[in-house]
Structures are given as C-alpha cells and as structure tokens.
Image (cartoon, rainbow, N blue to C red; front, top):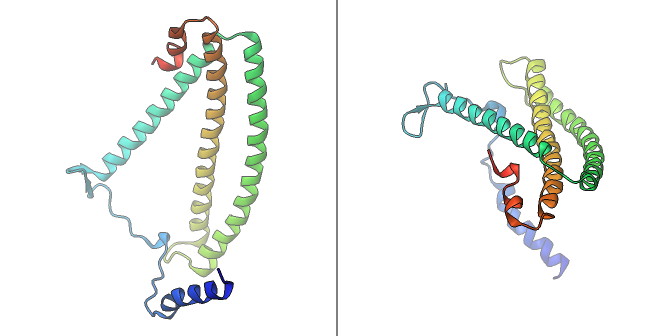
Length: 185
C-alpha cells in the first residue's frame, strides 16, 4: 500500500476526533466511591459483606495452595528426578530474580511518572500530595509483589509436581499418576 495514501487515511480518520470540542478530563483518583455498607449487590448483599466474602475466598485459596505445596513436597520422588527438578527450579529462580530486578527498574520510571502526574499535573483535591503518592506507590508495589509471589509459587509447585508425577509413572500403573497427592484435598 502506498505510504502517502495510508497517511492521508489516518489523518482523515483522526481529524474529526482532533477537531471535536467535547473532551473529558477525568482520572481514577477523582472517582467517588459509594459507601459499601449502603450499596447492594446480587440482590440484597451489602457491598462490604461481599468484599469480606471475597477476602475470605482469597485466604481459603492461600490455605489450599499451602496444603497442596506440603503434600507435593512430601510425595515420593526418585533422587535423580529430584535433582533434575531442583536444577530446573534453580534455573527458573535465577530468571525470576533477574526479571524482578528489571521490573523494579521499570517501576522506578513509572513511579516518577506517577509522582509527576499526581503531584504536579493533577493532584487529588483536598488530599495531601505526600499521602496520595505514598498510597498509590505502596499499592503498586503490593500488586507487583503479589504477581511476583504467585509466579514464584507456581514455579516451585510445578517443579515438585513434575518430578513426583514422573516418578509415579515409572511404576507402570496409571492409577498412581492420577492419585498423586496434589489431586486429593
């Protein structure tokens, strides 16, 4: 396709958008959250009760994950399979540590942009800039740490499960593979 023709099509397509006068300036920080105790969801469930129910489910998921981790760690495994599993885990761990350092460098750049936006360009009205920035930056780190922890846990559990399942398959009977402890609660 002709580059000039492509450029003219892009300009003609964007021209109405650029010339329109209706522009909305809004931010997530300017959203007004309702009182969760007065908001009703799913018929007659109060918002704060729904939120607490979600947190309970999160805690139950963490407990389930830890139980599966303990059961997998205690499952029988051949020594050489365990060594290979540990080698794979150490390789993945090295990669994850390197990736974590890179993510923190990216976060530092993003933190500068967040600081400029909420500290200078569009501070939250009625709130101290230092408090707003601290909360935003803290919870961005909490989110990154949560994702990082889930990735780490997934790598560890996966390496445990792979070596234990491989060992169970050596016995030549299909049932032990399906009956490995990670399938039982």
